[in-house]
Image 1 (cartoon, one colour):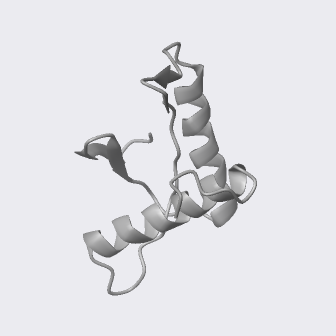
Image 2 (image 1 turned 120 degrees about the horizontal axis):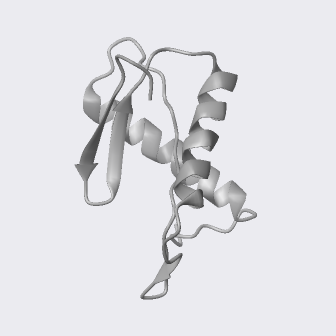
Length: 94
């Protein structure tokens, strides 16, 4: 996180961050960097047959967005990336 940016627990195992605007390539790079940091932490990867890790998605604020719209858009983009990463197999069965 950079100075002036903010991360907070959103609920359960979800977090949101307010970050400075950046080009899409930089957003993707920062998302992967955060995922890599979490992956490097030594903790059990499976607990009760559930994988533990992190998925990160950065979404830009669009005109007229409210916080709920941002979270929904981010969740959808992150879910789509998870599906793509698993070769098109939806890990949540959707």
